[in-house]
Structure formats: structure tokens, C-alpha cells
Length: 256
Image 1: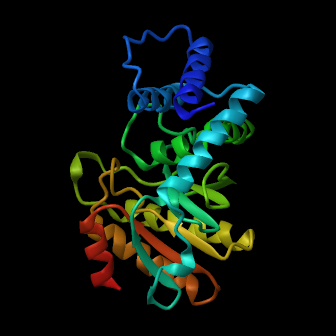
Image 2: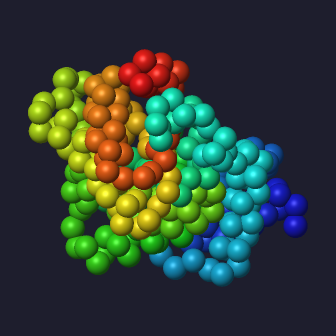
């Protein structure tokens, strides 16, 4: 089965699962069909996955991971003891764990083709990630508190695990208050403690809360670095600050 045929099959399966969706005619080229697949994956609610769908989805996502190129943590130079900076797509990093900036429902982003990191990670990991998160949340019985973290398998990503944490939301782009700064620090602490409990050797942090949640970039970086350095004083762990924007890379390099 070639790639376009595989993508068409996956799209047809998801559309049968969600007949309530009204989709205008989509061009049949591979790029358009692949965008449709991501959009359908984004909106699909947690529910059982057919074995053949899962097999073909994993085949596609695994191939795409290889095409994007896997980045080994050992290939990234240190900028400080046990601390590294890397700018790029976090779904390429072969860390023991990558950190996802999640929302309080912990199920991923349901906005089709949205540009947030939550959407990117769930889209690349596969639909089994949403199902796994749903099992966690059903057992928990309430929204995930700000500053806490949960760990899941990474499924089709090159990392082993994903650490999902809910950062503070800063309304109206104002300056964060003391409580919100403590909540952000708690995100890093919760992820680091989970990593230590699971005997992980490397963690790649995204810039938690700085995107859709509007935490000021520089202050967020200051909190991230100080929290990580405090933890590293008593623990052995390789930390990567994964940044996507040139601005964030500049801030982290200046601070470190």
C-alpha cells in the first residue's frame, strides 16, 4: 500500500467513525489528504481503536518520524552542566521523556490543525495517546490541577515517555503574579520528580505556558532555569530546554 492509499484508508475509517462531521470536498493530493487526517485525529474523541487502523496509523507515523529525523540527546552540546538547549520540533527528540504543555482535560487539543505543542505531540504520537490520557482522567475523576504532571508512554514518538503538565494561564497578557509564578515552577518540579521516580535519564522541556497561555517568555525562562538548577544540585539528569522560537533560544542562551 503506497502512502496516499494508506492515508485515504485512514481518513475513510475516521469519517465512518464520525458520520456527524460535515466535510467539504477535499483535494485528493497527498498533502491535502494528510492535513485532513491530522484534522480528523484532532477531533476524534477517546474510544476504542480498530486493530487494522492502529497498525496502519503506526506505520505512517513511524515513517514520518524517520523522515523528520531523530535527534539524540547525546548529540546536543551542553551550555551548562547537564543542561542543553535545542531549537526545533520536540517530537524529533529521542529523550527519555519530553514535556507536553497540556490543558486541564489532559486529552490533547481538539482544534483541527492547531499550532500548539499539545496538538503537535498528540498528532505525532497517535490516537492511542488520547485514549491512554482518558483512562487516567476517568480514574482521577477531575481536571488536572495547574502545576501537577502525569506520565504516559510516547507511542510513536522517538522519546520513551511524555510528561504532561498544566501551566498557569495569564489573562489579558498582564504580568504574572506570585501565585502564578509558583504554579509555573511547580510544573517543572512535578515533571522532574516524576522523572526521578521513573529513573529517567533525560528530559526535554518545552517553554511551558509561554504560547497560548501568555506567560512572559523571559520570566518563564528564569523560573525554568532556577527550578531545574535547584533540582540538579541533588539529582543526576540531562535536561534539554527545547525552544521553537528564535526569541526563546536567545533568552535561554543569555540566561545560561
